[in-house]
Length: 474
Ligand code: GLU
Image 1 (cartoon, rainbow, N blue to C red):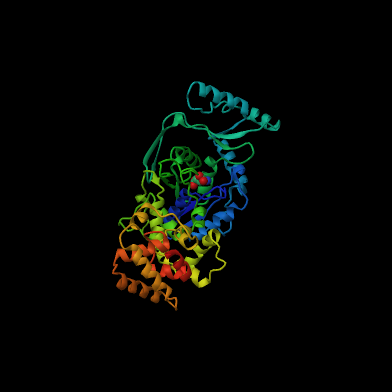
Image 2 (tube, helix red, strand yellow):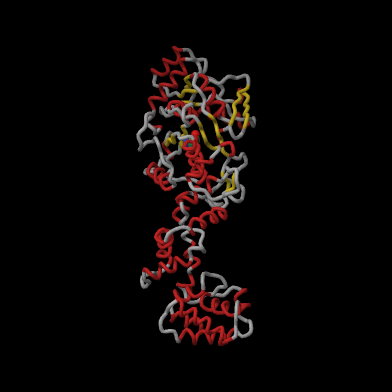
């Protein structure tokens, strides 16, 4: 048996949606599970959508995610070029071959004629299908038109009877009546192929064994199969995957929290965590475990366990997984995902490196993503803050004023500003005021940090500094 070869085939739009990245992850896992190859193919046949630098962007994204490309535009490989716009002569050659064997035909219909057909279909409220007007042109007519410089496309000739059937690994048996299949365009008048043609030619020529892609292609796959059959080629295994939806059940878009990988990355999500999360989005392992590194995912990945139902992009679950990875970071990695955000939000000029390190460390177990450091540390950068109702209510409890007064005196008398001495100050306050437990810690915490929750109190106080703490207590 040949080794598995999968391909990730993004269009170079300078943007990687989490749904696309999930497809790449599934393709990578499937190939590597078998010791096979993962191929990157750039699908740039729609030149209007092309963005400068998009290929670098795709490479950067995959590299960050630790997805290693075996063959691709910037890698070596026997099946190149791996960018569709560099393969135009191939598509032309194969389209002409199809015409020769009677499975495709030249079409010279004008945009105007097609527009009228579309309007008619609209009025009759039926789906527009090209009417096959050009399929019976004679060889001479075709030659004459081409010699006259008339523009043409090449269309696939579909059977008009019967049913096409294929098996999808996720969706099972898919059946389509052939009369519903349009004589679709394979080669456009500018010489570019359509996706519908190029994907077949490339997947075959690149020896792709398994095609994983969005389920928007489930119903067009019978057309692709007819092309494979016309050429007498083996078909790949199809694995169509459901869409990734927003929490509102709608297609992810800017409005419902469209998640692009780079946005997540720039907000301080760790690529390993995003990969872990996305691998579990619409796929499940046999156990209930949820934390997996790449090597383990490769070992256990089984595409038969991909789910048919749409997957909801659940930021809370991603946060949970990401916070797990953040807890295991060493200090330098932690600084890397947090400090740029602190710098952007606050003036750190009079803070020492030590102070910043300490600040970030005490929040390591409290943040879900790097940028969250900004909101949780605001108490260090602003001197007043409106208390919430719960805090206000608590501060009316009896005896609190005394606890605060005693604690302020204890703080005042500290000479060496260490966490240990701060801890002693709290203990002395306990002895002198008689307050204990929540009645001891909470008033102090609320006074110095304006909130009821946070990291260790002595560490927080240490970072705030003696002067600030005294000001807030008074
Ligand atoms: N370029 C196609 C897309 O981005 C790829 C689909 C496929 O994987 O075949 O939707």
